[in-house]
Structures are given as C-alpha cells and as structure tokens.
Length: 396
Image 1: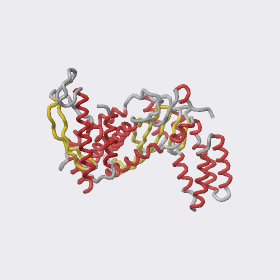
Image 2: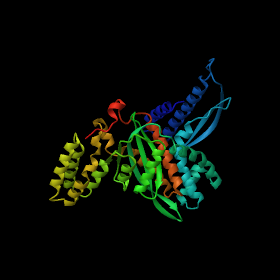
Image 3: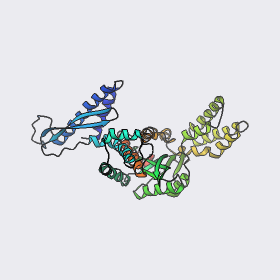
Image 4: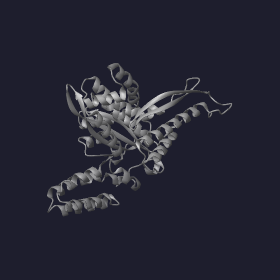
C-alpha cells in the first residue's frame, strides 16, 4: 500500500473526529487503522476478501491481536495475516517511529537510575512494568539503524535553497547536565519539495560546528546550494561562505523583527518600528527596501539611537531574499516552515526533560524528522518553473 493512500486515510480520520471526545476519537482511530491494514493486505495479495482472480498472490489466514499505545490511549487492533506469512504492515513503524524514540529516551533515563517518579510512571505505562538494559537495547536497535541510515543517505537531488535552524537540549554528560546544540538543515529540491536533510549534535553553534555540518552534507552529495536562510547563529555566515561559495545568506526576518521591536519600550513606538520593518520587508525589490531602510535609520536616530544603529549595521542582512524569484520570497524569507516541527519537538523533549546521552536526543529528533518528511512529501512547498529559467539566483 502506498504512503499517499495511508495519508489520505489519516486526513479523513482527523476531519471525522474533529470535536469528538476521547472515546470517539479512539474508535475512529481503530476503524481507520484497521481499514488501512486491510487495504495493505489486499494490495499485497492482489485481491479483495473472497474475490477469485487468476493473478492473486496468496490467501488470507485470519488475524492476530495487536495493542497500539497512542497519545489518545490504547487501541486494540486485529492485524490480518496471509497463509504464506509474507504480510508485514508498514503502519505501526510509520506512525509510531517518533513515539518509540520518545519511549526509549525515557526508558534509558530510567535504566540509568536518573529518572524521577514521573518518568518511572511514564516508562511503566509505555514499556511495561519493569525495564531492563537488555530490553532497552532490543527496542533501540532497529530504530537506531533506521535513523542512522537516514542521516547517511546519499543526496542525489539538487537542493538550491537551505533552511537552517538550531535549538538547545539538556544532555547528561560526564556526571553532569549540559546544554548542547541540535542543528537542523532543511533543503528545497528543484521540484519545490522540502526535506529535512539531517540533524546533528554540537557543543555550540560555532563556525566549526556549522562547517562540519555542511561538509557532512556535501560528502553525502549536497550540491547546487544558492541560498540559505537562518537566524543569526554564531559563525554560520562564515561557514556558509566557506562551504557554499557564492550562495546568498538571508537572516530570518521574523526573528530579526521580534528582536528589534523588543528593544523599544512603549506600545506606540513598537507599532512605529513594526511598520517601518514592514515597509522594508514587503518592498517590491532590493532598491526600494534599501530606500526604506535608510529612511527608518534616519527617523529613529533622534529618539532611539541604539535601535537606529542596530538597523543601520544589520538591516541589509534581511534583504538576501530579493535575490530570489518574487513568487518564492514570502516563504523563503523566514525559518517559519520549521515552526510546527519545533513545537511538536518541544512538546516531546519536554516529556524527557534531560536526555541520558546525545544519541538518545538525536534518535528522537531524527525520528520526528523522518515522520515530518513523510508528511511533506504530499505536496510542493514552492512552485518551480522550468529549471533553466527559474532556479538560478537573480542578479540584483
């Protein structure tokens, strides 16, 4: 069964249960997941139940029970079987991958004796009454292989645009707890699809850390990078210049605007600065944006000297987007495409609290990246014209 067919079933489910209570949600989830597995087996066998066809590839052979622990509770399913024993549903691995990673992170903390009473309770609920080191090892082996395979996957396509982000998580190291950077890179293909290319752990957001990330991507085949958008991460601009010569860097306009407006105290003045920034960021071209920038710097100088100086020094960092085709600018001027991923990531990592080691953190974030990529495959993020006319950076 194809992933697209599964995704349609999940979308139909969420539409149907909107506004329903927990019991109704679980029942609709059960009915939908059961139906998806039946369709998977039908696709494998080439025949519906009781259908007689010359080309069928086997026969059904009853069911086996399976309990699925989800965020809405336990769901009891009946997994269909075939006589030859060939059928293996993709459903559980696909929709539980990140849940399994979350469970393992909590379980590892419990095994290492650093869990709180709350973590112990969650562990017992998700993994069983007692968790041993061998059980954790068995649970993690398959998931580790899947995540690591993705992190080393050859990048055959051309990714002209990159979106780069960083966050911090608490990792237990050397008998203490340290804040470590997690670096994420998203690529936009020449067909306009977005894809998380990898996640990396780092001691800091230094130039060396970013350079290692970009070199890793290039060793995997990354090529054709013309444009990178990110927040003002330390050392990133230098790493981009070193690894992607000629690429345009765009500072995230959303982060820049929030940072600048926060430096103004009164609500009235915040509104004035916000309007000035809007005129800059929504200009039709770079020349017009520069004109609005100079005007804002002059107007702010008498009353908000520091804000004026900051805007004068860094304002052009949010204008790289004017090198792109106009139809791409709105979506490529910020890192907002990662907001939903980051919100869900924050929710799940908060349940863990302190990761027992860096790999446990990478496993969870990587699993979520795989899950997100599958969702993003459904539709294009940008509409691309013919390659020879559109994917090149415009000359400003």
